[in-house]
Amino acid sequence: MDSLTSFDRFAEEYDNEMGDSGDYSHKNTIDGCLLDLVGDVNGLVIYDLACGNGYMARRFVKEGAKEVWASDISERLIDFAKNKYNASGIKYFVRSADDFTDIPENHFDLITMHMALFYIEDLGKLFQNIHTSLKTDGRFVFTYDHPLRLLAYKVMGIDVDLETEYEEYLNEGLKKNFNNWTKKQDDLWIYRRPLGSIINALGRNKLLVKAMTEPKTKTMYMDKQFESAIPFKMGFEAVKVT
Ligand SMILES: C[S@@+](CC[C@H](N)C(=O)[O-])C[C@H]1O[C@@H](n2cnc3c(N)ncnc32)[C@H](O)[C@@H]1O
Image 1 (cartoon, rainbow, N blue to C red):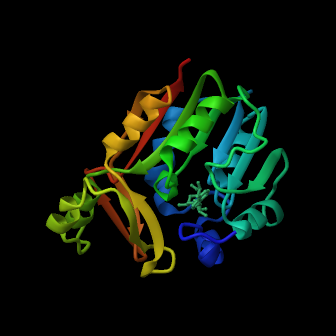
Image 2 (cartoon, helix red, strand yellow):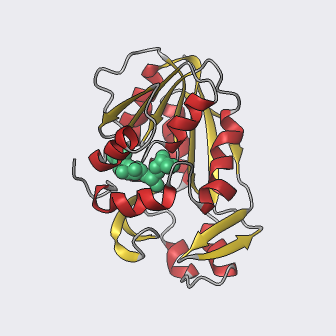
């Protein structure tokens, strides 16, 4: 399936970097953002949206989840997930994250979306579908770019035009983004929006934010390691209310 935001075009580079258990940035900062909020998954029914090569879904199975569903818009990444890695216990689909056709209602204890909400155009459609398919008190846990990340990049010595970038903070819309997997400026697209848009869209769809994470940064950029006390990623836990 082709789309501007799909990783299909560079699935192999991305999969090589992530491997079976995540790359340096995921292991050192980004996974903690999600997993500290996810907590114990033993016995849970989970759907991982925009699952990439499936490494988080595999982790949930290993940690005792009862049922794991996972989907991504990239056919090639789902092919890796199914055929290169252990796919047992995981129900995989190729589809856009906001497409919940044939996904059961009131079924999941937990829906996760790790580093992918910025690839979604219609948050209202996504959150409404998540609300419908979660059980009451079920949780949606996702990670996102921290608004302070540009400052963190600057402090770590990465070339960023802070004024221009932050002037754009309130402007919503599709933007080209630096692609750290292909090292190109122009082949990864994202939907930028301020945090308020996300929190308000969650609230409108009866997904109430209960907790968030914002750890210090330990990352890899252009093959070099960087650290900063300023967070570059964050996580949110929202609970379904009726
Ligand atoms: C940064 S990766 C994260 C993958 C995975 N969640 C992880 O943490 O390893 C973003 C993923 O979102 C997928 N993606 C982009 N647009 C999407 C969409 N509209 N629906 C579902 N997946 C999408 C990409 O193909 C890619 O696999």
